[in-house]
Image (cartoon, rainbow, N blue to C red; front, side):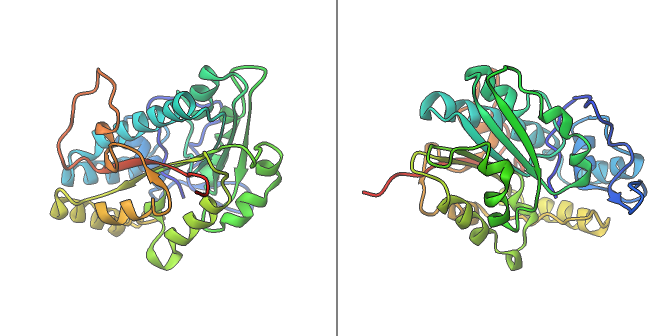
Length: 291
């Protein structure tokens, strides 16, 4: 399901067999796959000509999407650092993790707190083949684990041994949903899925969420989305408005600067501000305790 949020990382396990798993364990290469399409947009190596053609078509219709994808990854890293440094969070649930990239979430968190614990979740067989790269903590005190599960069944995620045995759900958790909810259409009730996850989090937890948004240039965004859909990429992207993305933070304290283009969320000094039609918008919400 998840888009691969990768730059130029060579994983230990190759995914070059492709996207569709058959009973004998082989993969189909002739159909574009969202993880590999995104990898191609970022100049990665885990993709095929069919994925590259779709990525090029999207970029022709929406040129800012390539820079936006890179900035989405950088936003995730800044959000994790904020949760650790400002909120004291030392455990994370990353749903829709995608193909591993450096720095992975556990590398960021454990670089700050060596004992940090991370559960990665994805239902994509391509990502599963890369999971080894997610399971090697950078410190002996830390722990990371991988769960193959579907975001659309949040209770199964929360009740899995991977989550219950790795995370202490009585202590604050950083829930990371980076560029994943736009794979759920309204019939799949993304707000309801998120509500189940947030309800399970203790006070002091955070939700870092980014999402595809075409508000600044609806025509180009719609053209890119239509091209993606017409090429039968396995899971279409649902573009939502700024207001719809903000509504995902209902019940949380949406921290400053709110939901903004990902490059404008507490940018590093080295990051130049991009145009308004940056494809991804993100924010960070805090779950407060009962008054």
